[in-house]
Length: 384
Image (cartoon, rainbow, N blue to C red; front, side, top):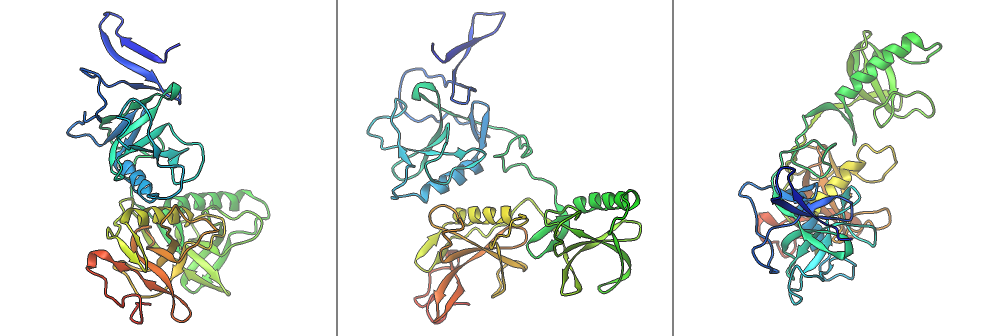
């Protein structure tokens, strides 16, 4: 049975559309053509901001990120990009296919379940258009379209939705959102009144808080401590259970955490960087920064992001480093010599590379927007 369907209204025999079933069991619209041809589609709306593939909408920003990943695989022995074979384009076009996503994340590399959404790339690794796989290995073009920004819960790929700023407290690389802390304060108040023999909260008066307060340990994910090993984080409350702040317990002392507001709009450094023999484009650094951001508050004991204390960047400290690779993203087995540098808002502020001078030392990479690189930039005058 064919997977194509004709769409018409109940009150008329007039054909409204033709659709085809794709491998997710969704349907996508066929593009009307006056005659059969294999040229790429340019049916773009003047105000379009992405591609519509069935019910799946990919904003231009996500397509650009996927394209940047595809370009990192240039001349490498990987499964993708792979040659496109089919009726959409001439056999001698040399066009390539690159999967847009794997599950709910962008495809990076490897032989893993992918699709059904693909970029079509020219020989020069430029975007031609976006396609979706149908049944019987039939590919269909996605349509240029426009969608209003959606919340991530309903559109996990949309980077256009701008969540409100999140005030809270930054403790090293861990962030505790103020809203979560207020909810924890209410829970602490309830538990103190209703749980028999609760050992928390503890009353406290002393540095750095010159007032009567209550202390309750916090887990790294922001939840109240209930049992097991106590970590270093402490929720500091007034006697009426209003939040004072968050502190870290260090050698018998409370170290207050800094108040910080995390904003959704990232002000990344947009320059490319030369790290000794390797050049990184802006998008590669952003992808590494996003990976670092995912692990900032992870309960797992990750070595990275790592705190960095060295020459400053054009952003407020503290800084953190995370491995950046010319191929793929960092895993625990392939650290490499190069690091993206981010601030507490997960914004790219620079890059570092490792040199032996004579011992292994992190030095600044050259910011290419600053002009030509000096001959001895990674020599004796390297910025450490």
